[in-house]
Image 1 (cartoon, rainbow, N blue to C red):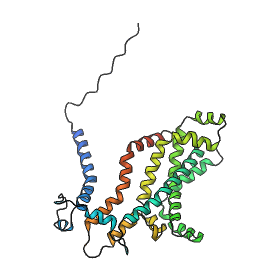
Image 2: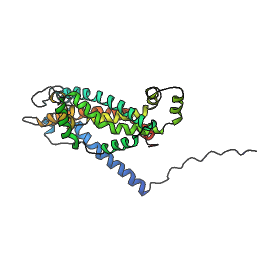
Image 3: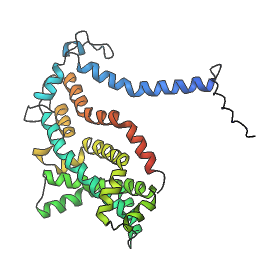
Image 4: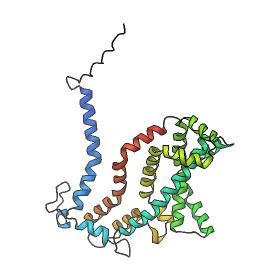
Length: 297
């Protein structure tokens, strides 16, 4: 006669609030307030006219909310000598972002796949060298890269900034995909080789379709990193391809006469809008992909 398994009792909720729990809630509340208060100030300031801002009520809600500052920041704010708004920087950032993300993920995933499953000579040395480079501040490389691109004739251009972002993204992308592919059952790889699949066939038909969570993580990391970049875009993009962050700096620092704080806040929120949408729209996939890539390294 077999014994019937009894269901486990449901977890009991604490009958009273302890000091530790009160302290935890207080810490969470203060932390949330610390990060949300500046965002609140930026939003309400961007919706106020300058006459209301000059009254000094920083935390007060706008008496008559208006999106005029947002429209001006997008269409007619001055970014130096031109007054075409921050939309020019938005388009430039997209032109930089899309090829940089696609190329760095393709090359990084291919390199990580090769280092994890194809045991070539010197693979561990190459992987170690890439990891060392990943932790060196990129400011160290700026001057040598300026000299190299000047010598090759590329100078400051869209191609140059795309190449730069691809190069600096490769170590991180390689690490992510190498750890993820190493966590997959090696029997899949061996079975595909027995069936006659080659290097690129296994990569394109087996590995990449299984790496969707890690691709999402890579897209988020590269999108936020490239979109928020300032110094590389300023140095390598060229005057005609300045990204949104550089244009935002120009808007804030090129104001003549009265400083339009509402326009500055609106331009800042517009600049941060894409990374916020990416994070909030794919946060669940981000956590899943990071956890999957951390299983085995």
